Length: 215
Image (tube, rainbow, N blue to C red; front, top):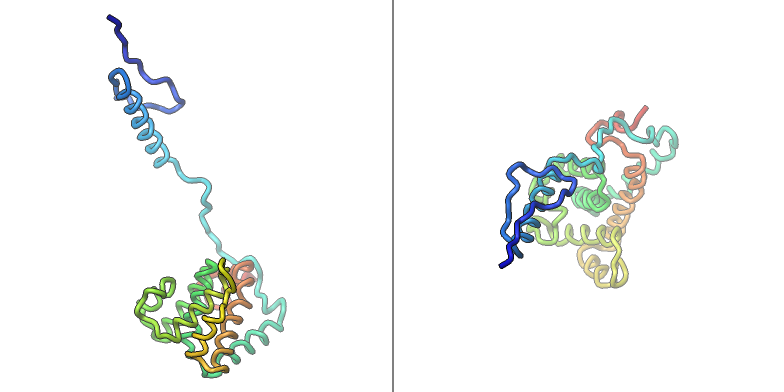
């Protein structure tokens, strides 16, 4: 008759708890060992601070005020604002699509800017919150949905074909006449023009124009 004495697990470099269990012979021991080791590793992982995720403490933009460096930017910005403000598209629709653009590229400055514009215009909080999930939200008109779909199509690749297919253009034409649709295109172009400044220059979100850029 042979006997077998249960042994404690080999050292693994981990500090094991003082109440480390003893296991019976055979398969149950290996299963228990595995489960216990997983519990120890999970506890160590939870208690170890993550060092690979930087904490953002930005107090100034990367670039100084671009309109000071390149004064012509004021003229360009003013012309774009005038072009999109011709009255054929509600300003709230423009702010909705520009907020969606900021969400797509993951830029806090643009998200805060256009969220604030929508609140000033009296847009319901439910509508603002639902912009990121507009497809199944009940808060938007058909015209607003087309505007949001267009900006998404422009800014995200379509693996199965054109970014803006004929079918989408046809639906947009049902909601907007030629001038209004061109204005909508310019509104998308307006936010896309300033995307590089927002992403690379990193103006401070939620501050006055004088405080957005470092001096």
